[in-house]
Length: 100
Image 1 (cartoon, rainbow, N blue to C red):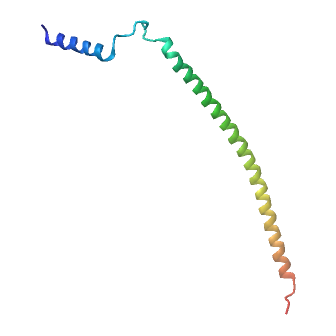
Image 2 (image 1 turned 180 degrees about the vertical axis):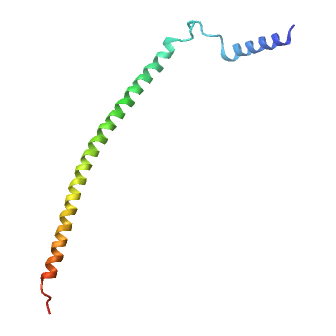
Image 3 (image 1 turned 180 degrees about the horizontal axis):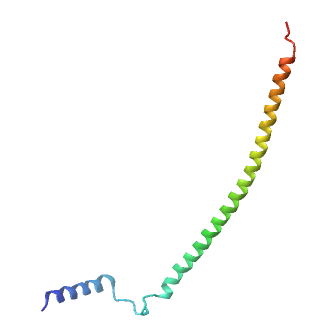
């Protein structure tokens, strides 16, 4: 009788035909525990895995930075020793008499 009511009824009928009847075990809140539990477990496992990976990455980068800073210290001391030896070599060359 009413075109709006007819359109609404047609839409509900098409939904029923295309998607089937609504599930009967859904609680009032819309949270279907048996269906959502695997997704929740997968998210918890993925989150724990991500936290563990970030923790390992942090520890590895800490160790690497500590090792590299020690290498930089040794490298700077080696460069200083090399400069001193070069200056000593130049000084000795200046003191040596030229060969004719």
